[in-house]
Structure formats: structure tokens, C-alpha cells
Length: 172
Picture 1 (cartoon, one colour):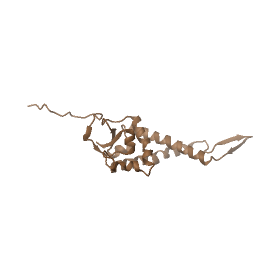
Picture 2 (cartoon, helix red, strand yellow):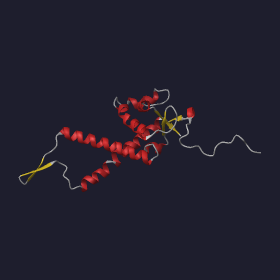
Picture 3 (cartoon, rainbow, N blue to C red):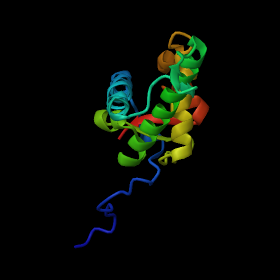
């Protein structure tokens, strides 16, 4: 006897899962964020410091005049802008590589078993939306992290950066 109502043997990752998707809990979100911050603060500066260590370029801008080398220290504003630009590029680079390596999610999200999906369709999001969501985390963090705590207020357990990027975090 054959059963005509058989289930498929597998379910592709891009198939929408609809309303039965379970929202990621606070511990998954916090664990993911902690792991991603660890990658940002540990794994990015270490290779950069090795490159600077072995570089033969001086860290201060130097000029040669009359056969004499003079190096001037940068002002506080120049140093601040340089550091902001460096960490901005390092962050985008780290998030981009992490996304590519881990199949459209950060390393922290993969480690805690969390996925980010489109809020309307339940499908996986693309690189542009993932980047927008990660950059929107700044908005969530500015008012004392209120945007992260928003999952306790929102009926669908979304943060501000989820709302901005039209995404939601789920437990697969």
C-alpha cells in the first residue's frame, strides 16, 4: 500500500517557513552579539597590528626638508577621524567576510543557532539587507541600548535594527 500524502525528504533553506517560525530568544541574540563583538575587537586588530609592526612606514607623517627628516604628531581630531575610518572599514570588512563564510549570517549567529529572515516572506536575506541591519545596530545602541531591549516590548520580538531592515531573527 502506498501513502499518497508523503512529506518531502528535505526542505531547501530558501523555502518560506511562515508563521510557525520561532523567534530567537534574548540569550541567543545576546550570545550572538557577544561573539560578533569578540571577532570585531580581537580578530581584526591582531592582524592589523602585525601588519603595522612589520611595515617600514612610520606611524607619524614625516617630511624631508634640507636633508632633515621631521615628523609631526597628528592632532587629536586627525587621530580620531583616522581611528573612526579604520574601525568603520574594519567592521564592514569583518561583517562582510563573516557573512560570506557563514552563509548569510554572522559567525555569532551561526554559533548560537539563529537565522535572520525577511519579515514578510520568511526567506533568507541578501548581503545588502544584512549590511543595512548590522549598520542599523548603531541606532539601536545609541539610546543606552534601548533598541536591543525592544524585543521585550515588540509583539513579534524584533529589535530596532530588525524593524529598520524589515527582518526578524528566528531559531531554525
